[in-house]
Image 1 (cartoon, rainbow, N blue to C red):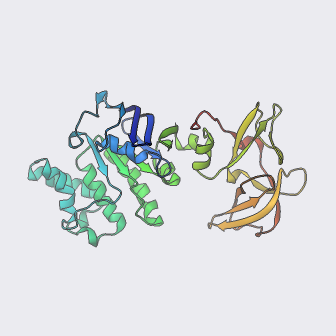
Image 2 (cartoon, helix red, strand yellow):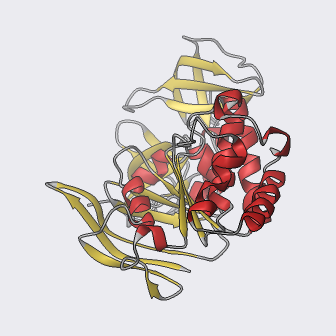
Image 3 (cartoon, rainbow, N blue to C red):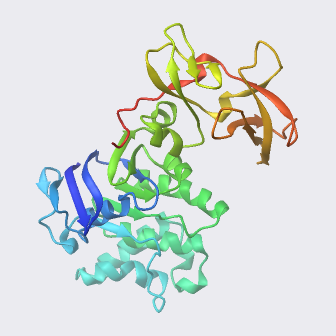
Length: 347
């Protein structure tokens, strides 16, 4: 549906987008994920018509999108701040765009009533934004965006202003809405959990370049490049020489469990794959517990290991059975270690 090809955008000496190419399918929930300054919001603004790229093409259903003025594109943008009119009630906020288009009052009323029911705000139609909770204001902004029935809805950090509990509820609400209205959603976020829970596919950006495009499961299981491996979820990345018979020879540390390979390599081991082991043959690393974080259902343990520049992270169910300062041994299965492709790394 949307084809972005070799799009570049520079601001003086800063290259915000560096030859970005992506394809987004109709009806897909697509996420742009990356740290601040990676170019994801600039790309969103290019699609919305608020930025013009220095080079590259963007097409929608094969037709040039860049030549269409922002107000005529079948695209709607939901701002991070929601940008609701404080002097208008919910109903009038949602109806504003339709009224500007000159639609008949009866049609506006029908469409507003339908979208209010969709987002569960029928009972709040006459309230003003200051009388609503953060989650309700976000629903109004969503309703105002989808009532115009765009082909594509762009969402810029849509949940960042909400507290954790409301954010979790709205993640489910966004997915439900997207399936119900059948609009292609493109969301920009720096929150990995948000992207993983919402999107059908995710594009990870860093320094203006696309590092990897994949489903959440594949992105987590098979990251390409050190950046993706370290950015998407917690990961322990070890660098060394892969042995033909299996294992990764890490200088100053020893041979760690890993699949067989050749030459230099990067290996990632997720915290949930590492376990506390008994001292002896089953142990592959020895270190000292640096810190323990308890999350209710699980605990995250950080262990400093001589020869490694970063603590090794592991996740255990429930409360940790060790304390800070304790000497521990760590182990994992070779098949739990993932060889990280380096073709996705930015030169």
